[in-house]
Image (cartoon, each protein chain N blue to C red):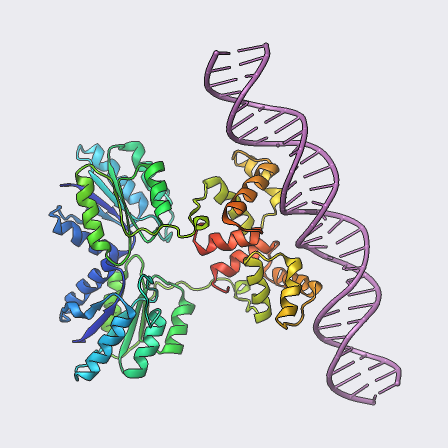
Length: 222
Length: 222
DNA sequence: TCCTGACTTACGGATATCCGTAAGTAAGCC
DNA sequence: GGCTTACTTACGGATATCCGTAAGTCAGGA
């Protein structure tokens, strides 16, 4: 079983119950291993390496309230940053997000080891996940929801999120190329933007940009 | 301090930490007082009355996953139902929702006694809330977020909400007149729709429909 | 009845989006 | 180099939206 575990979770109540779960697994309790901000988590990881006592497991949320400015903006960014300094650190994502497609995307893109959604039996789920990855296996919670409708399980790329966000902020489509060029985002052609939007709308069976914005807002995609 | 408290919370991890908080306040621990479904909560309340040992406090979430059919669909409905059988039961809402306006609306409409959002220091916040209402005061968490800008407080008319919803559902502007006519909503002319949308966007200083949709979705106006 | 004012609708040109097609660009392979 | 393949960009006509102006509708009052 793990000996050194770092928990990044901004909800005190959740952090407390994770702590209890770790206690039940006889993982050493230490207040400094429970952080409420991504930057703090990253610093703890670096400190662990520096002092020759690296963490073995990171348990992190995905979404954090931004009530104070942070270098690292959320769970995904944290995982990316951590992977660069300590690739062998195991990562367990514990979050309110409960879509299978999102979990699989994280497994594939960021190489996370386990994904547990906050839900009815999340404490038991979490415990099992930790035990599983301690045995060098990956864990995908059985409580994840499959997109019943295929059209709703579509995972947006960063590029798509960018242009959809720009639209949602009032930028007309025709002005987006200038913005993308200025920020060195490729592709930046108006045609490419039209094509991406059209492709996404076709996949989701939508007809207008308004509908797409509404969909993304409902699912907190942007 | 309270002796008999009921906790309705569908996330096991949160329930565990509420339980810990209650322990710290020396409130008697009993597994039957932690329920995961609204219907169960309502039944427990009725049972308490029937047996002459009514609950003194209900701590409830607002949103529950609907993974099994329920008579009572969520926290608000639960509070309403409970109020009818036991008006003197104190109610504390503990939820991810963190807007002041929503909390105040619950105080006013359902007469809840305390509102605590799940956030950074929610465990301490919860403890303080319980202590406060035990002294027969109400508690509004200081962590609630106020709606900041006046220009964003525009109150939409039903007509405006209707056409914005239609847009958000993918109906092109030009088709809206037919829909309105069919449902005997006046005005129904395309010009009128254009004018209203334009007026609203001018007031809110928006330039596109996409921006308007995003705004309404963010504020749960539609 | 006629007038007035508020509201609704029609119209039309400028602009933007939609969407299919074609041309340009770059990386990999023979 | 020549070729393929995948991706990006340019172009242009059809359609929709934007927006200002004018015309139509209707209720209330003299």
